[in-house]
Length: 524
Image (cartoon, rainbow, N blue to C red):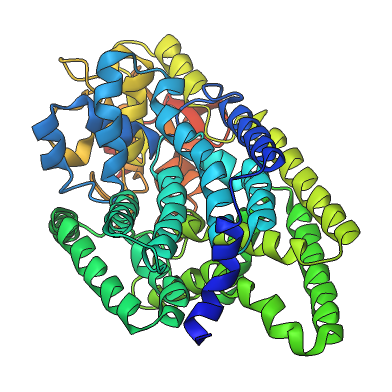
């Protein structure tokens, strides 16, 4: 028996042992339905977030050719708007509808990771990983967001499955074609993902011999060819501005932040991260003790863990190193590693004795379920729906709206027709393809996408909040390290001392109405 055959035996035997058992199929079906239910729960409940979801829709509102031209501004995640383009023309533009592609991709990732677990480890690990994916709060959150991160999870998972099949003795050309399609899908969803999956995928390919390695290299060449339009769009975008200007070089503490988000989502239940970490460490300790007693069988017990742990850890390490040069270290950009994290946890748990395995999986699933429900039952983003409604009701003719940052302007058009373009599309200042309403005064971060640099000066505030005029100030997503403490410096600090300022806070949004300021000439 060759070393290559020995390596393949475990996943192949798990897959080829016969048809999928009735109980396995029932378990996967039940877990998939649970994952679908969590992702559809409150899908349209919270308002669009200001800086991201409206851009997915605004792109899809344009004609198909116009949308492609605008990818020179929005090169990353283009696939989502392409999928959304026909949907909004057939159905509607509700919050639930524009999030539905993410919801479906997120739900499909549950059976996909079962397949990956069955292929790379064994059927028990596959079922356990599907359970953890179904309830994971980060996976649920990004399955309810009209951005391409749920696509990244799905395509990343499928890339490992198809690669394993393609490099099998019985793998055919169709699996290589599907692998290229999966990697291209991941690239058009997030351009960084395929690059940082490659080191982990090497753990699938290299042990299977030189022929598999050569075929893999050719498949990557084909993937690069398919992604040439994306590369062109990225070069054009980078020539116009750095889309990640607001990120900084990461520190080791940022890795802990990513780990927290992987386990708690955006629920801010940090105790979940600590409990999960302790639980995983405990599972690892129990497994090592079992391996120690197993003696010479230790390698056989640990070898199926190699690919899941490489998938979980190497993308994070690679992006961390890359971000020391060009900052890009952020949890959503690492979501392609999340299926690997969950599969590694599942493989670790299912190698324990049955009582310990069942108990650890039950605790992990309960933690994920509780965090996901907690997260979904509150408005996890800024409450733009009520903020825009309040401004529209209170605003009088002549009153202007200062918006920091300008990328929040499209959400005004989503919730109120007054602030849309004449053809009904949402307007985006930096694209410069449709005029924004003269009601807006955009203020941006240094090196930002569009508009004059903020924070607003006292002259700007005085000019628009004196002589009977009022200025509505909307602050959200500004970068404090670039502009400083925007609500309390420059023009706004002056306004609080010299004008009448009324606060109307919304969730994660600072709303102010400024009036009664001294005339602009007296502020110089």
